[in-house]
Length: 328
Image (tube, rainbow, N blue to C red; front, side, top):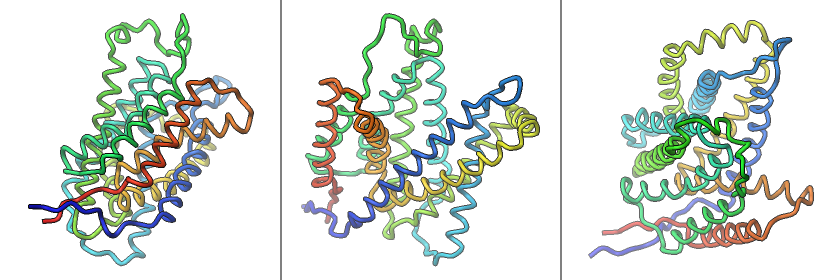
């Protein structure tokens, strides 16, 4: 009969705190630069940067170079990881991102944010089903409280006319196509987390920069064919020739992306994809909450309730968040 025991060796709270703030600040600045790139009117014609695939492609190139440089200075050990898992993981990762972006063509931005707020749930479910993860009962309650709290905090009452919907009269919106895309995106998030659990399930903990390198290299491979087949690379080239100063913004964005991914993959390999999904999900919550506090914006009773649920959930997660494993 097997005995259940908590993992005896767990990464330090100090490292987790460092990863949280690293992710928070790098992606906070990343979001500002990205909005600066995509929302600026360029030239007399007031053109916009709309080359999403190319933007992600060059970020993946930068991430690959960054992780390879770090690996070249580190003493690499064979961690026993099945390298065939990386192309599958990169594919599900890109699938989640593209489905989420496409969903914005059929649902409003607040709806998309709410949908992605429950990301820790599929990550936990797929981790249990595919990677055979087990957690303390309080862990399930903690994740549920965090997700419910974020949804309550970010939910906006619907107006009579959804002015924030990019395509309010789109026929697909009537049959829930955007919501279907969000479900696909969340399923891909769950699969990505489960595969990362599998990658990180070897006897020796996977090097974060090894995972970062292979996932980004495979992402580059998929995106290269995407930008060629869609013709976006040619439009992007013409745009860059007209506005070459945009390259400075892209370089700055890539640097912040590299720093953010360093902390992302450090969190995944040391604490697991579920912990990482909780951090990335609560990041937006803390950003909005900080804005509310700094600028003295009023909060509704629903938002106060959501905030309380998030903090209680985080407290439970910090106490009972360790994975449970079986010992024969």
